[in-house]
Image (cartoon, rainbow, N blue to C red; front, side, top):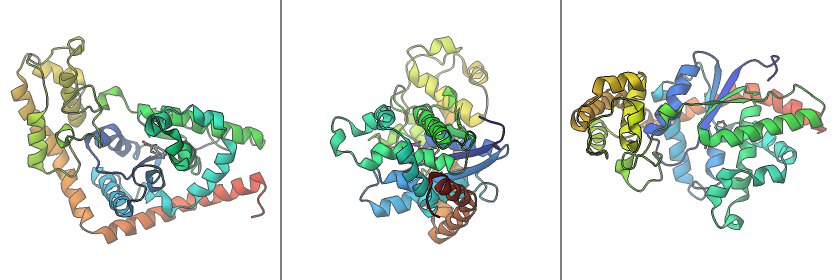
Length: 339
Ligand code: TRP
């Protein structure tokens, strides 16, 4: 990355189904910290949502877009500091994505593991949009010349592709420093939240058991109940990280506690070492309720007024466009369009 680019953060989440504790601890909570350190923009990637699960479900995409927006705000993103907007309201994303479709090579996209996983055995039946999804993601980032992108481990390969696209564009159009090469900000393993029913599986919105996850729309009783029902093992709580071996549920619950309390896992382990799970779960339930119920309550309050959410998205899109439009205009001229 060259120093000529000012530091800027861009990240986004897809509006599909409901958000859960993993989205909060793994992403949102870290974004909230970043907004005080750098210029940030936060996008709801509705155009990505229709590449796959959201396709043909307009009501669901619209509802989930508002829900994700509400979660951003309830989780602590201040829309006056960091624009919050949905991708479809800023046409520059789609315009740059088209140009990047011509920069990226088929061979690069053929290597994307997330496409292989999502399309499964029937690649020929996946949408073209799903295939070119990482190119749209590159446009999301580079349309703001963002330099830092907080993402989970699973998005690292897409960030590498973004850098490849930036570099090839800069090179092919002889503009050595035009786009920055954005860095992933990988949120640590401590915030990798696993299922409450199986410590080896990621907490996921697609898990059929609702008890496997804490949704950001759950009320206090539901949150406490899910934690009390969480799977554990028959041993007392471990004293150090070596004792996590073969005990993924213990590791997960302690990690969740540490992340919610903003404490190192070591400190939490020292406090509970040798105790029974029942007592620990009671304390974890209290902690989770105290940290999450203000957020879930605020989300419900915001969701009750969809028109206000739409106004916020419109205001965010205006600020985002003010950055993105001149860049896309520039890029169009660079590639030779008569604009
Ligand atoms: N692909 C990302 C995910 O599934 C979502 C996303 C789309 C994104 N565009 C982005 C994340 C730009 C960061 C920056 O998690």
